[in-house]
Length: 128
Image 1 (cartoon, one colour):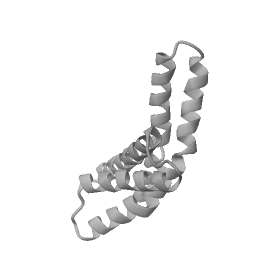
Image 2 (cartoon, helix red, strand yellow):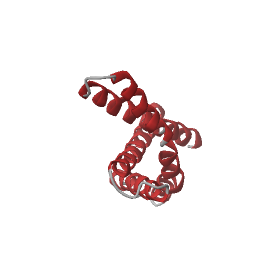
Image 3 (cartoon, rainbow, N blue to C red):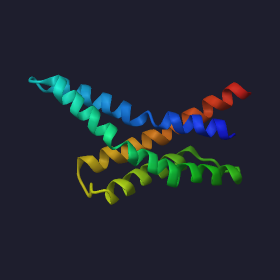
Image 4 (cartoon, rainbow, N blue to C red):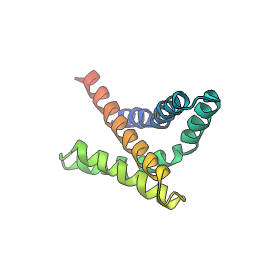
């Protein structure tokens, strides 16, 4: 169980990389000049905010999953909601009170919790 949780948490830490790549490619293609500089700026900005995903996973998602698992009431929507709530809460606490960065950080944490669930399901499929 502990190994599956650890692998699932590692999957969730791919969320900043995925968000940085997707947004970086989008902005690099939408801007005519100096696309590579914008791509790397957006990618590094997403990686710099990876601590938000880690904190949301450590404080809300994993304990929430373990509590739901204990009572046999695991709901994927609840896990995703905890990730979104944790991303918004920690983003607000660390200075992004409103705007685009708050939304991106919250969605990045929700994607992290989705990747956490993917890692758990993938681990279960190998066991069964």
